[in-house]
Image (cartoon, rainbow over all chains, first blue to last red; front, top):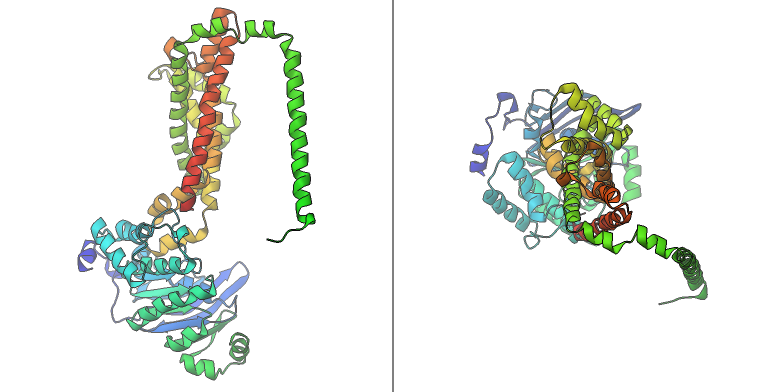
Length: 262
Length: 268
């Protein structure tokens, strides 16, 4: 990977990640869609290697929070720092920072007109400037990691939902991200396909990847998560050790939410 | 497999209704042919005259080739122009207005007038000659007309690509242009192949309007060739033969595109 890094253009100091800074830091984040206030002042700091699971009722703003971190949603006010880099500084090279933040979507969002291999190599080639053979080697390694190295030449439509999501994870991993964001990664999967995706995520967590996961999988949150955040109505109502929060929710709304989903 | 009478009845009824409408259509057609055949002698002399038809060959193949050449040139460059206009129109820059005005003008003007303006008015106003003659000025006019029409088609195709595709590309660090070129446009073009095929067929027939640009003998397309034949032989057969050749071009195209779509289904 070092040779790939050396090929990328020289970084301006403001674009240089600070290894001592927290991977993700969010300060007083607000987001409004028209009159609707979706995020009402979120403060959040995630340390390296943490696996933060975010739960909450639909419409609570958890996906918007996740999407604000790599600026797929532009905050109305507040600050987002990725490894110390101020994401809202107009001079920051956003595309460059985004390569270090992997993102996995509920709908997979694989590129349907490309083979699995092309899906996993395209951004390596066009963004990181890796050579074709480098990119292919890395793609094969990542696909092996998610157990799909036999599907290199298949198109997404020929794969099951679980396989597609695993390719999407491999596509993100191929960029060597420092952290991964998961936006309800198993919510559109048939129940019998959920396990294979969670398994891949569990392995990632055990390898020390910093992860933020919006999910409804309480079992995953309890076993793999290092922190559980409960959001409601655009705010973080409660957070802490997953086992603790799930067993002894402090807030009344956390209690009522958990009683419905557990 | 379970079935009941109530499942079958609607199908049968529909089949019967369709069958009877075919029968009626066939009967009407046969009656018309029988009626027209009383005038067959007159018709065959003026419209289906083998002697005149024979004289059209082989020169009509040059006209066929020209029709195809003008259509392909106008379609290829027109579609490229359409993609450019569509991207400008959905952009937020000031060029957006250029695209909007361009599309309104060339979609609103009759193609015949546009060809005339390009072939004669512009050359007079700016004192220049089109390389290859006025005919190519007319082809440029067709490029602009097709570009304006197809721009809206391509824009609709871009809108039809799911929002998540752009988000996935951007989250991988791809900037706007590579995202558009490698992720959005290939999908948008696949979506709009059926309406673009339609545009191709319309364009093929619109090349007939190039007659107004004044072709040299070797520049004539099918309709101009047919019209000249009409004058030369004082007989309408050349137009009928030209018409048949248009069908010879369009019908295989429809099948070709159908096959192409089937092959690309996996990439959707």
